[in-house]
Length: 69
Length: 483
Image (cartoon, rainbow over all chains, first blue to last red; front, side, top):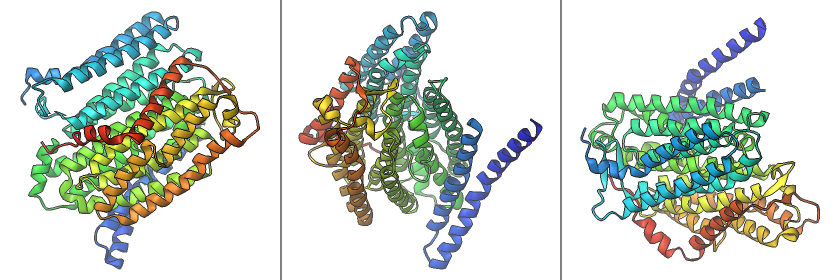
């Protein structure tokens, strides 16, 4: 019981951290790609959006799926 | 803030539907399971009365067009169009739900009340003229939707669908709210026309762009566009099929209205910044939705991915908002989409297997031999979803592709045409099962209410497709102004 509660807490905390970290990482990666290819600021916003969706939301979705089973 | 008595007259449909939801909920607690059929008919009657009030308001000789209630809402033809479409989707949902709710072991009154409350949220959403009023309306809609998704509380899939929808929906609302707060932090305004005026003289800053991006992300989640789409197949599969049909149409109509209005009125100046992002999202949504649908054998999941793909097509209209075809194209497409998508889901509900609606493509096996009319009508919906003339889907796609072309996105039109060709394969898998398979499929259950849904949807699909001129003329008057 205690172990499952602490693992749930850990997963919840991970989801929270990823929600902030992934868009920031995506933004920085996109900014680097934008500067490298000379594409302006758009890649950084695309990176942030992808980070938000693919990592943050997707991780949360998997967590909810696991918990509700 | 100025409140004029005439403003309340313009909000009469929303206020009446709110009262209707409360009445049905009150009667539901008094009656329990016993009189749920009466409550279903009462809800249908109340939606029809709301539509009549809306028609009366629309036809009023001295109708005020512009901001109302101190600018929190706006009364215009754009809102009217979406409000009529939302009431139509409510009506179709209530009709399609009667058999399901009757068979379920839970009291059905709450179900009908929740459908009405979802409608209230959507009616307010499409008339929203301020980011706060839009947000509150969106939450009203969303909270009722989460409960509807889990209406079959004894079913694991339904409960799981509701859980996923609720958690992810809540997070997406949080993202949207954060974007809204950043925009407010930069501009100090939340009214859409005020924002437009203020941003006209403002240089773009990273903070403002982040706010717009988060607002966009929240709305993309609601329309299930890639990469915010992954909740859709699971929620559509797990929710009761009439609710799935409703989710695939109603909330999307409202979200598109908000997306179009917010980005057309308030953020038009930054089109160069958000335009390319929306273009990439549109392309990814068309490709992913159609390719993933190819791999599905579960009909609800297939239609879920198909609805994701259609979200990508409709985004073309948002991109082409500066052309004469852009917002008009969205209106035409969403009108067509409502009829063809709801019609396809209605046929899925018509087929019964193990006490539930059809699950797999195999359930459509040999439908033409058992009921030729049902098979032909389903074929019409599938042709329309694939965008083949002379159906409503073709007219909708024609205007959206024209909008994208005129807005300078020819590559998106190519993606749209190619993915439309891909979609023919999976739609025709159902058609092939209906007309060419000898294997046994699911049985067809008779229902007058469902027949009415199919007739309305088939008529809409064919009228918009065969004789679009009058419909198009009406819709041309519904493109919003910048008040």
